[in-house]
Amino acid sequence: MIPAMDSQHSDSIEGRLAAVRARVAEAAGQAGRRPDDVTLVAVSKTHGAAAVAEALAAGHLVFGENRVQEAQAKYPDLKAGHPRLRLHLIGPLQSNKAADAVRLFDCIETLDRPKLAHVLAKEMAKAGRRPDCLIQVNTGEEPQKAGVSPGAAAELIRLARDELVLPLRGLMCIPPVDENPAPHFALLRELARAEHLPWLSMGMSGDFDTAIRFGATHVRVGTAIFGRRPPLD
Ligand SMILES: *Cc1c(COP(=O)(O)O)cnc(C)c1O
Image 1 (cartoon, rainbow, N blue to C red):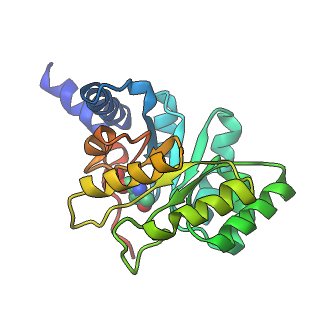
Image 2: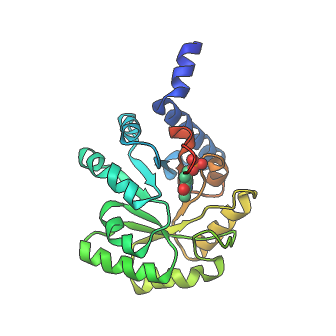
Image 3: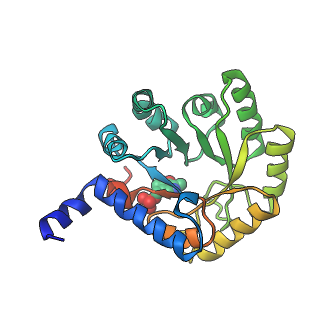
């Protein structure tokens, strides 16, 4: 490949998307899985609508945002122009934002407490819209991190799926930043298997290959597609 082309390739969202898709396919292949079994959620937080439009132009349709308000400012127009766009909420959800989240998102990955399960059930009934739900598990039991503790996951699953009949598809986790993620991915897989939940959202820019080897059905990748984010505040 000529150098000019190579640098253009890796400096564009289209090029980086292609590179990430190739890594997803390779990791899936190594695990004896099909690339199509892994959904790439392109995490666009802090990046503007123009960046998302570039990814859409490259044929990508699944995106993730961590804040309801930021997504509300960015996505309604994009969704109107691309009816097949699917938007995942990957950040903590406050109960008072649940109504907005139910109306905008197609998947809520961060259900993590009984009260939120009740509020989501109510708001879904009101809105006549039932986004897929994942329960976030705090596999590292980090006090500052959202997510239900592994020991309380079964009870929250029972409430969400069996009692409230939410469209619960699976589990999500964010391993501690300073640890080997593999045992956390393995734990999430075990919890999901025991409950017969098919979706596993795990793996980010730094570790999505590993997550795919541990059975991830959804990887949430931001930096490797959109580039570095401005530091917070
Ligand atoms: C920001 C974020 C990601 C993406 O992280 P990168 O390292 O940029 O790929 C994934 N999951 C969650 C929950 C996030 O907040």
